[in-house]
Length: 163
Image (tube, rainbow, N blue to C red; front, side, top):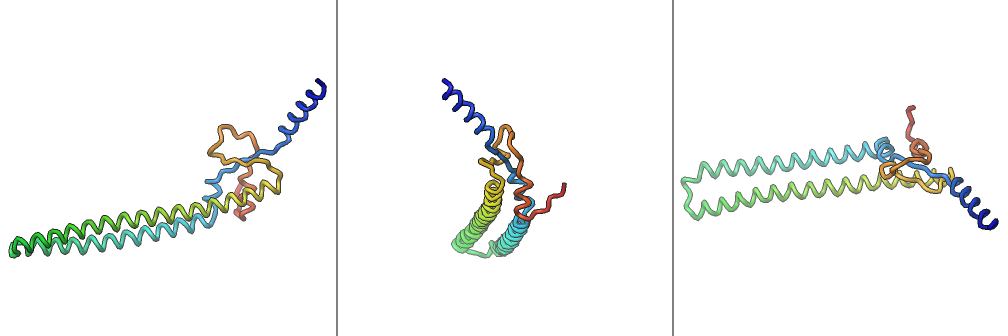
């Protein structure tokens, strides 16, 4: 019984001696220069996409107006061909919009994944240096009883802490 009691007491002390930490990944990510750069890149892509789509729409609208003005003078066959052409142009606009949305979304995922990797690597380094057994993300915690090491990770990344 005394050996069992000793093992139980030892395991309780070992559990209490483990260092647990948590970070606010979103807060750290927002403070990284890479985040601002990613936002600027995405904004630039969005503006480029909007300009390209607007240009396609403008050209298509010009074709529609031209068709409306010439419609009375065209044969039934010519009208059908022009209408099919205009429908195809409008479908191409929708296709371009979809392609741009996909491209922007993919780029956003890649950029955010890179930022997340930076934060995770810095968190691992801090955990190793400071002797933390586990580091959790704040958003997934129900109760944050461990140490908040967000500022330590920010410091590791060279982010100024204004407190």
